[in-house]
Image (cartoon, rainbow, N blue to C red; front, side, top):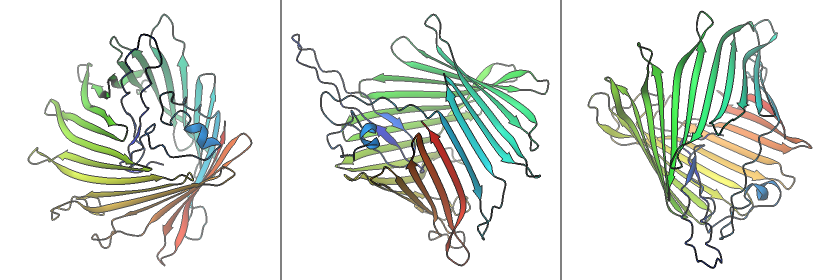
Length: 408
């Protein structure tokens, strides 16, 4: 689940120099690897590694324990097939809108994704299909993949098609460049390049720098930048890291800074804390000013359970407009997540989110609760997710239900 503002940082310990006769110097510590998926920071591989229960969690964290011989565990392979379906419910628990279903399958470097829904006459029709294929690499060239996307109208007839071509290559000096070009079908059925994103990542010592620039064709047909993001990740120690991100957008014929984000991550024992401040360009003055601040705390306990809380402060009202009378950021949202694991491997996750009340903007409104239960099966897992909202009588009632079957 994606929680607002979460930054998870995976940091591996430096490898030991070893008992070599030439006494080589130890390798420098690797830079932090940042994964944005919520609000708190976890620093893996530190000296305060939290014990994990056996089974799946033990495999997931193999190589993360501290020590000179520790090696990061390889990334798990994605499941071969994923089938999921969901629906919305009315106040009486009855389905109130068409059923939507997803199907994902992977075979020999090809991933196929199909999303279907029920039309107004009750038929199941395709909504969107995606097929991604990894092309063979020859002569030391870049790694290339193509994703073909087909959209359909409400009656299930093919409408517009897109092609996303991705090339990834290693540049001199060790930097990695990734170029993603989007082609879209025009009225004549021809594929035209409509967007290009160029990402470059380089690592030097404990610092990792990433630039991401998105370009679109101008009137003369040449690609010109309209968005750019520059991010610098620094590992200060095994228990502290920082991330600074600057976002630029096309204003007045050039790129100008429109937002800046600063995150500080620390870890004390089994508790990780992240504070993120976001600054935005003010429309009238053009100056950068604090727009929001989030504070997250994540505790990974020795029994495998996880407790997380993220508080977000800002200047917006419940309707999303800026509160011109606010003199400092006020509490706008609180997200709490709890996760436990049974002896048989079943994972229970509960996320409770409370935002500003529409009726009284000085306090938080009723919660929205999302509960997910992941049960292991003979060939994978089954995930059932239910969303609860408060009704007019104050009771929590289910409003959405989805089931996902995963085949590994």
